[in-house]
Amino acid sequence: MKTDIVIVGSGAAGLFCALHLPKEKQIVIVTKDVAKRSDSYLAQGGICVLKDEEDYPSFYEDTMRAGHYENNPQSVDVMINSSRAVIDELVSIGVRFERDGEGFAYTKEGAHSKPRILFHEDRTGKEITSHLLERARERENITIIEKFTMVDIIVDGDACRGIIGHDGEGKYSSIVADYTVFATGGIGGLFEHSTNYRHLTGDALAIALKHQIALQNIDYIQIHPTTLYGNREREFLISESVRGEGAILLNGKGERFVDELLPRDVVAQAIYREMEKEGSKHVWLSMKPIPEQVIKTHFPHILRHCLEEGYDVTKEPIPVVPSQHYFMGGIKVDEHSKTSMERLYAVGETACNGVHGRNRLASNSLLESLVFAKRAAKHVAENYQAGNPVHAPDIDAKTYENYQEKYKTAVLAAIEKERNSHE
Image (spheres, rainbow, N blue to C red):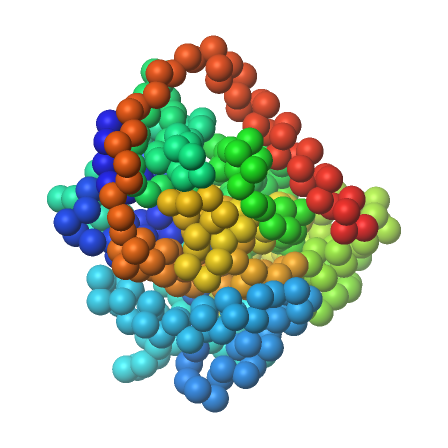
């Protein structure tokens, strides 16, 4: 198959990028599972926005402080100043953020000094991504191919000219393109406990390692402090907004042991210490300080899910444990989401532009993904040049035998090496 641009991933970043590319260009989006099974759909809390010019200093400082001041200042500035335009665009395609009269209702999460987070119930990611997917399906120039797993890229000199992969039946094929965008999401499938879908296994990172594409801070992995304790394929996340609205963390004696609004990594470390001290497998989260009506209107999905698991959050605390949640490192990109390989871009969680530093500020993920996906699309459009003719390569399936295990091993080894270099 030949196309103009191929995007690997159907989450918010991949879709937003596709929607901002020229309509006269043919775009193919491939996704490893069905289009709706991306982590973007799972985001509960919300999306940050610059409320007004007076909010800039504190928004900037909150982001930098949460990231331990290892953030890229330029990237943080770009994200914040681009936020209002992104929100306006989302509203224009039908995204329904909570309202307080005529204006938006803002909520606050851990490490934010002010309420600046827009939300839709406790399923903001689904609200945003479902509208983006609907718009992408309406575009005649966008083709979405589900159940297609990328295993490699096509390299022509020092440029990426498409991808190699296989369908759900294991049949291999290639997609030749002038430009390629990685939007493959996180790395939760590499870990025993994660809030991510299991099929997100860092494939783009493994391919980057194989082709010496620059990576950055790949040991910067965020642990979410509060996921519902239990045995399940994917840990159910209890949004940080819950603590932002007043929920408190308790140990086995019913004692509060940490300021719940500290940055995620600090709260997670406090929970681990308390679990170690008590010899327990979890701590408790009490939502009793939150008015019952707020729980029912702001957190209906969490309320319903916990009821299904046997817990009524309006009356009793729930057991929670930290789990792998977000990847701050990734494929190194510049302010236009361009990688170190020509004609290859990376956006969303698989990319690292330095916005998050060592630790992501709550609800900056959706915003960062959309801002820099749009910038990638703009850069491709403004600098578009048709590539030299490239023939689809012959594919020997034996070359990719056991590739998934090999890729997982390579990525985990690279993460461990990076971690050791930082110690």
